[in-house]
Amino acid sequence: MSWWSWLFGGGKKTTPKIDWLEIESRQRQIDAISAQNSQLAFKQAIIESDKLIDSIMKNLAGGATFADRLKALRPKFPRGSYDQLWKAHIKRNELVHDNGSFVADWELSTHMRTYREVVTVLRGISLR
Image (cartoon, rainbow, N blue to C red; front, side):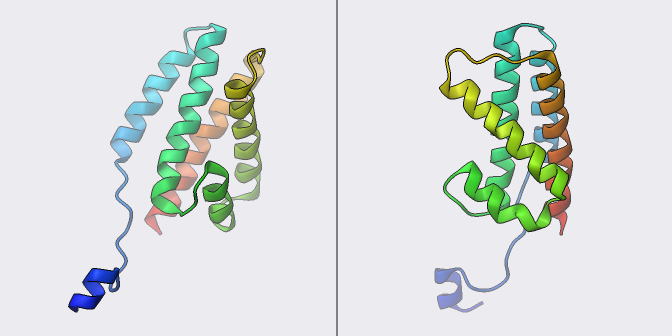
């Protein structure tokens, strides 16, 4: 690699370094939070899951926001997973920005399942 290539980032692209053991550990922590069976825990579990997904996407796509990164990765997502992740992210935004927001049991289970499935999708994307 020439000096110019090194200086300006030319040459081989490196694959993103994602610590999947750390991701699994964080998922277990989030599962423990959601098992506490309280509104505060439900909200925290969704928010933390969304942050986890965003941290993975930051390694896979450019963009200033979660939405930008998700849009950049859209072609690599199965349509159902993409749509479900948008719904979960919208719920996360509601929880963060609306003081009167509420998480129903069915919402928690639906969104937590979505976040887990998306981790699997992102893991597959990272290996390509």
